Length: 337
Image 1 (cartoon, one colour):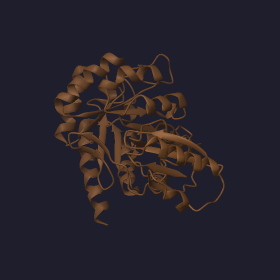
Image 2: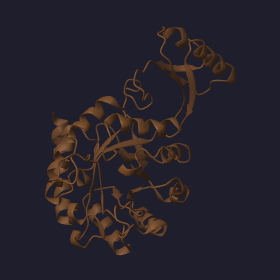
Image 3: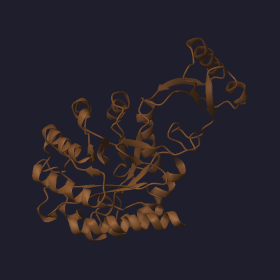
Image 4: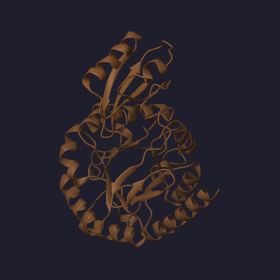
């Protein structure tokens, strides 16, 4: 069960509610976020929620059968909106594009990418400064100095940024320079990191699906962050590893539709990692929109053949401009149905 407390609840009212929950043999856990205070009750006994819902200090109460309760649509019917400020929102009924290089490589690259995005009406730039690479000899990012440079240039241009955090120790130093934290596929079940992103920042967190993770496991990961105190969350479908070798991953378009049914959180599609082949990024991006995605994140670089990483799945600027135009038209078509 989920109980949402009134904002002005006092301690005696809260104690009475907790004691009533315990009396039903439910285990109560209090959750405080940027937007409210909740009580999660875990138990198996059936009871009439009206017997509790009438108590002083309760704003709302719901029975949620899912183990991931706070991110479940069974509790919160209205979709979560992520407001980044400056008129940039990720929300139901809207569509956001996030684009940029796999890796931040230097000032000239940042400036050229920002110019490309602004020319095409894109307000969010992706890029990596801390890169998890399979090979220890591959480029692993410019680190915090690269992030500071990127943030200042993006802020000057009115562009928001999304970048990956890899470990708990990075959160504090990154926080002033991040608009959205990305939790990559390798860290989706790094529960210490998820806990700290709930406790120690109020910045939005986009969680990518694990390399071989299930839909429910992605939702459990989001529940970790929410239950630790941060409900500004996005989910990202980025393909999963299967036996198929013709593509980098297998983009699970099913997951987009299923997640939209299961959760109130925004769902973002990543076709670049989902298929891993430049020529197929566009059709998978357009299919993701029709499946219900609230946004698409993809990789673009002025010269992909010279990119420090993931050049094989990265669009050049003319290809990117064409994709942006087609995505906007596809979204308009979807909304017309």
